Length: 113
Length: 114
Image 1 (spheres, rainbow over the protein chains, first blue to last red):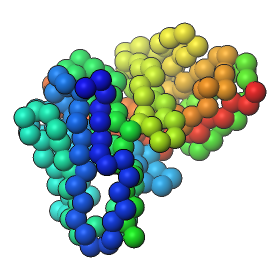
Image 2 (spheres, each protein chain N blue to C red):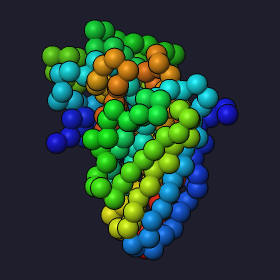
Image 3 (cartoon, chains in turn green, yellow):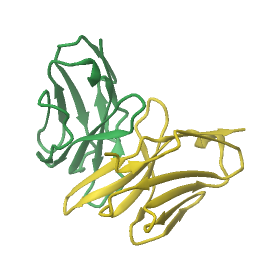
Image 4 (tube, helix red, strand yellow):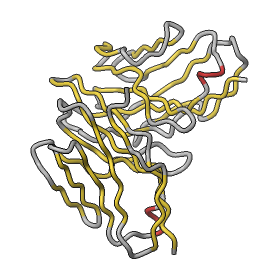
């Protein structure tokens, strides 16, 4: 597609439920990143994919968070047993091999009530 | 441990004047620095970058300055326009090969008044 697509754009969930966030990157972008922005905070790195493998998962805040990427394309970020502190905007970004500037999607605003 | 710091949460300037957004970093291994601009309900968009071996990069109304000895960079926008009103994030790149990561600051909300 023309840009990075994320779905849903908004998600309200009850504490304790699992959620899945989806990212559909630009075709040909081998690198894919997940970031999140909590209220009043900067963009916090979560995980990086190169193709289907994740060489850097160091930003995942707990084992409730996991992500996968299939076919070198779509990625899903799963949060199990959501907590209120998980409320944030989750942003996906893609980058080509020589692209210093990532292209971000519009994000998924997650609210845990 | 915040490796990239934007100490001013907000900045207000008059249209036509210069906007100066500042950023400090602590990790001397960062090799590229980038500025992103973010409007509400949109993802950040890449604005301008600078290599750690340069001290200045200019693109139209936007200029980024890098002072490596002070671990400080700044974004200058001149002349500022109301459409420049947005949150500006400073980011620094680390890693190598095909594994890069951007570390972002908390952002500065720029308001350009007509």
